[in-house]
Amino acid sequence: MRTTVDLEPSILERIRKEAHRRGISFKDMLTLVLRRGLESRPESAKRFRTPTFAMGEPQPGVRLEKALRVAEELHDDVAATSLRARR
Image (tube, rainbow, N blue to C red; front, side, top):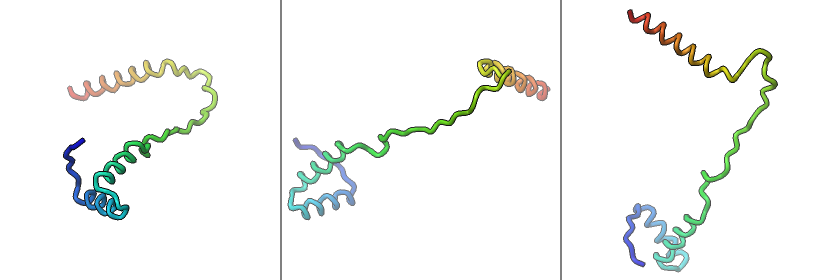
């Protein structure tokens, strides 16, 4: 199949040199390079694991399920103070 591809001059030259060194056509070398690139697994595709750490038992009297409500109340207090300061 025939197609047109624009390559950076440095890449074009590297492919030509490698094809010449191996004694194969430019087309075959380009096909080989593309095939290897498509079949290889990119470095960024490796599985990333985040370490976790035990933080101990919850402290008595601290109810974490109410944290969002507390944060909302604090936000309301800050907003009210800000509005009062504008007067």
